[in-house]
Image (cartoon, rainbow, N blue to C red):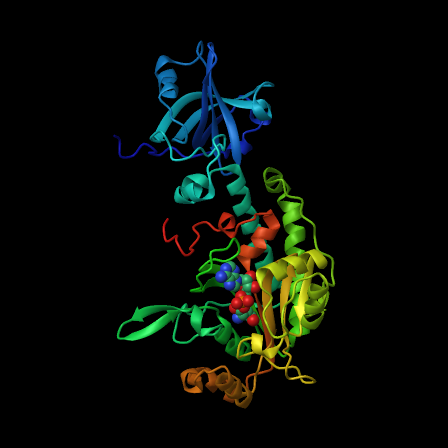
Length: 439
Ligand code: AMO
């Protein structure tokens, strides 16, 4: 075994950059080996990289024996470097191929592989996730993660263009924000700490200095769910805005969603094809359905949800059939929302909180927050929490924290909707759920 097969050799072109206009030129391509074929007079194989693929063709009459033997020894998915001449060829995919003058086997893959990334032998989701690094070479998986990448880039660009500052807040924290039951405890030297459920409290106090902030980061939920829409570690795009109320951030969310859907539709047309997904860009303004209206609609459709209870998944799904596309559920009962939620001025039983739904799936939630210390302390007590545990948080409230509002948008769920995936695990590189801690 050589220690440095790569040596000084470097790729000159990605596979799809090799076009017939380069005919006669020498190129170096690097990638993984697909099918190797022997058609009597010629041997050839497909070399794939992140951009796509190129055919490497070796006519036996023109290529030396050593090189032909090298091709014979190639296994599927091996990493190789090919130096060769570009040849225009009608019969080749994309009308172009490379005649090799040198092939370096950089790492020979051991066969049989745990799954076939060409997708000819179908594997179930668990098997695919067990061999995820290999599964991610499938064109469908690649397409999903290119779309996810685009969605995140667009969201980031949009927020930055609107004056938001990107921040990073601690993921090792001392208190819950969303609900005490769903915390992962960790040992932090001599004390107990938790994995953060949400950047909620940090992003709120940061509005006092930065005005508009956003964070893209992990949220940890110790819920025992085993559903196609929940994970124990998810990625959330969180924003918070000073001198704003729910309706202001709902408009930002609408714009952001429309921007992301439009960009993905336009820039990822090639990726949407293997997924067979027709993306519909939601139209602004999104419908606002009050919690009361939602309950009534559901009741008329035969799904009873007592007032004051959260919408269980079957109710969410039914509501998605009754109200299509993207819509907000607003005016939630205060008892259903976390302690930081601002009650409505004209009816304190209701909150200034909203959920953004897409068909039957909740994509985001947010609202107007409390900015007055006295009210926050009252709410903490009402939720059975000890205000003393929130002392450092309350300090910012005493220092004139401005009125503010924000939301948390689940990037994984957003990607599900953008790609048409029916399981959240499809759109997360290495998902963490009740059973899965590796890879
Ligand atoms: P919430 O708990 O609703 O709100 O979370 C916000 C969004 O994050 C996503 N999400 C999840 N995705 C996958 N698996 C999970 N277990 C999971 N939990 C949440 C969803 C959800 O809509 N602090 C508030 C946000 C705010 O008010 O700013 C919060 O965390 O898409």
